[in-house]
Amino acid sequence: MAALDRILTLRHRLRHANARMLASAVYNRLWPAHPALAPAILAAVQDRTGLEIGGPSRVFLAGKILPVYPRAARIDNVNFASLTAWETDLRDGGEFRFDAARPPGRQFLREAAALHGIPDVAYDFILSSHCLEHVANPLAALREWHRVVRPGGHLVLLLPDPAHTFDHRRPITTLAHLQADLAGQTGEDDLTHLDEILALHDLHRDPRAGTPENFRVRSLRNAENRCLHHHVFDLALLRAVLETNGWIVAATERVRPLHLLALARRPNPGENPSPAASAA
Image 1 (cartoon, rainbow, N blue to C red):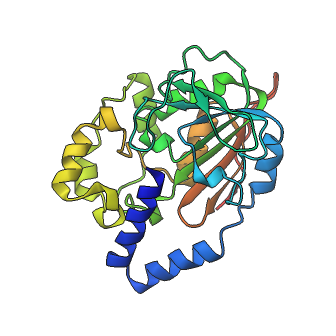
Image 2 (cartoon, rainbow, N blue to C red):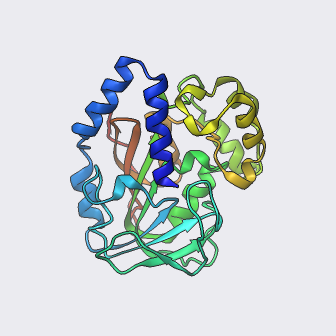
Image 3 (tube, rainbow, N blue to C red):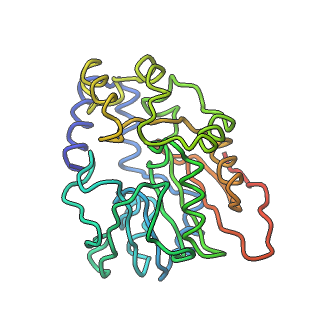
């Protein structure tokens, strides 16, 4: 599925992209980004045990911009179903193969906001790349992720930068809206944002979405496929949602070509969260 995604994206770019977009794609392939947070992230995961929510993620592979997989001792994984738009044949309790040189981790089939059966403080770090925007209740998810990481453990979180994705026409979600979702226990069947998405989603930047009618039909079945981006984040909202859930945010940054990146830490006992240091 990942290979098909790359083929479809390349074909779409060749058909529809202007010279500037093609030049940007070539530049990012030949000269990949070097996130300022990469050394701290790699140190945080070195020979430690983690849990990835969503994925597996190309960005964490050896040779990519955040090569976490070959550094970690073991990584377990959470996906919401055995068959998703990105993965097939997943099995609860099965193996999660994240790096050929490392023993596989364990596969969990859970909602991102309901990690039942996973003990408190079970992991040294949490990874999540381009997953939280697909979650209807992100504050509930971040609260669960906080629960399962040990005090002093880290969260490595990547989200799409809307300026460079199909969300570029949509408004940034407010923290108040996310707090209302938490208070109202919003579930994954929520379609509150559907009208906005159908009106403002840029299909030219989303080759897998198909025609407007294909996209509408898929979107109405989001509880099954989870393809919608419920919410749109910028760096300020990213920092706010983490601090609201009690994380200490080391820093945030934009990373080419389309990422927002944060490194955060669960406080140790007696330690109070502090404001994020943002490198925009």
